[in-house]
Length: 115
Image (cartoon, rainbow, N blue to C red):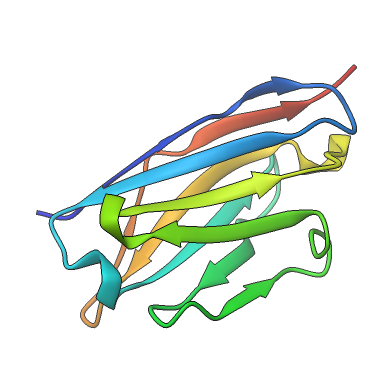
């Protein structure tokens, strides 16, 4: 069974860094596309960053230059390094794994950027 577990969320001051991790199980991780999404209260879930099985990355314009998505296939883990955080980055961040038949989602981890 496919399972995704996010960690690393918390409270951080504006301008600070935070690193999120997503550990996966139940699939051949290196073959799957991965992504990070976020959802703020009252807003739609939006794409933050993606990384393909081949390592190609894409970012939302709002985070480009500040966030970095990466993966460690040996650890079945995808990361999101967030720098220069802004209050508008506050949201629940979700990890997604894309398989051929369907997508799988983690439970989410809260990121709050506030002074």
